[in-house]
Amino acid sequence: MNVVLDAVRAAISSPVGYIDQPNDMSPYLNDWRGMFSGDALCVARPGSTEEVARLVRIASEYNVALVPQGGNTGLAGGATPTGTRPQILLSLNRMSQIRKIDRAGLTITAEAGCILHAVKQAAKEVGRQVPISFASEGSASIGGMISTNAGGVNALRYGTARHLVLGLEVVLSDGTVLNGLRNLRKDVAGYDLKQLFIGSEGTLGIVTAAVLRMAPLSHQRCAGFVSINSAGDALRLLEHLHGTLGDCIGAFELMSDASIQRVIRLIGGRLPTSSAPWYVLVEAADCAPELETRLQEALIAPLEAGYIEDAAVSMSLNELQEFWTLRENMGEAEKHAGRSVKHDVAVGVCDVPRFLEEAATAIGNLRMDLDVNAFGHVGDGNIHFNVLGSRSKADDVVVNRAVHDVVARFDGSIAAEHGIGQYRVEELLLSKSRVENELMATLKRALDPALTLNPGKVVGIV
Ligand SMILES: Cc1cc2nc3c(=O)[nH]c(=O)nc-3n(C[C@H](O)[C@H](O)[C@H](O)COP(=O)(O)OP(=O)(O)OC[C@H]3O[C@@H](n4cnc5c(N)ncnc54)[C@H](O)[C@@H]3O)c2cc1C
Image (cartoon, rainbow, N blue to C red; front, side, top):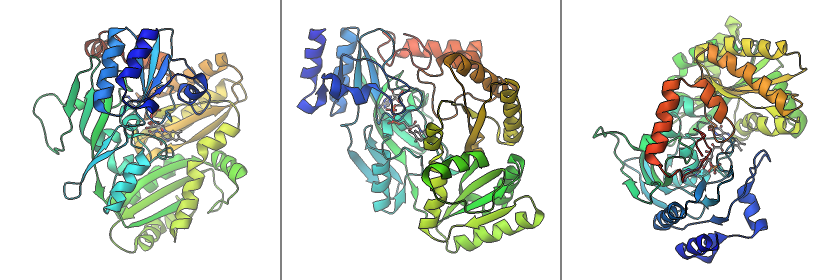
């Protein structure tokens, strides 16, 4: 393999672009939760699209696989090497230039290794926003965000990463560069090829840069924290707020009392309202003034009608952040609670209450002394239905089956925003129809016939 390593080293102009010492490679070969770890011949950190293309050609020539990686914050093991084939970890984190900002056209062109938070800051500095938010945005990259089609808390208003991408530059599996860095808002000339790469988790091509849609900056932001008795009441509130505040609703998150209490035990803080079985965190954002008053007024009718129990509205950015801290620490609190089986599922928004009931019943029926930690983007029908207390991998499989069987009854999805990676490959096969599975395998073989890109991920072809 020395010949491969020599070729990789020669392909990258900077000495910091090549790592082969085990200690230095370790952060790239393990995921942050300690769930996945892998092996690689080396870590290659190209500094340009041309260097990525060169590396792909080398991998193809020597029959070595490439595992693309951005911020390594993914939750499905997609950026960690798996299997026995020799692999090179391809980190895009040196490609971090913002190439262009168009204020009037509302676009920003950024390289794949840019950290999402930095791109959002750049947009903010010119009075615009990149309207996607999730708890890992301080480490997640633009390439990773696009390759997982990340969702986050603003998908309700602005859609997922897919809806923000106007153009893509992609290195294909033979090293050809597909230059689709267009800033067009309308384009129906032929197949929309960029869509193939968005959400394909590095199995069909390597994203090197993207043109992203920006939005005008909402100068007003405020949040409501609401106590409610049931998920059904949460949907009634959502319907009401769609009618009263319209487009201003940016996020609508549901959290169970048990999951909030777990966060408070971990980080301290206080519940902003009286306790109830469930809570909603709703954020509104707008350019027009007096948003707090408008949100307060919008919550009066639900309080009077009795389908919300209590509500607090943030009166400062600090208070808004306090509300969000409770939501954003759900994952961390769960990590401290021990072993958990995670489910990132989606059902139709109107089906969320019945899904939560039926999935909780299915878990109870297992009689394995388990706890449910349910929270998530209820406005998108995306629930993180995590189960605590499983004692072994064999138990995990049983729990997984029970939850995903309920998802199937609702014709839902087993991966709403965290991707398939290596974690859910078997579940994907079970959850999709034969036609869908065959079509995905056909696409993989057509775009990556030598199986160079991220083997064993998504469709599981190695
Ligand atoms: C605390 C926390 C909260 C999170 N919350 C959310 C959330 O609310 N919503 C959500 O959607 N996700 C969430 N995530 C998951 C994760 O942060 C996102 O999926 C993120 O977009 C991944 O970006 P990354 O750069 O870290 O990608 P990585 O983890 O490095 O990679 C993810 C996948 O993309 C591929 N990939 C990476 N870069 C490229 C590239 N340039 N070209 C081709 N393929 C590439 C990798 O091979 C891998 O398959 C969360 C994660 C954490 C840790």
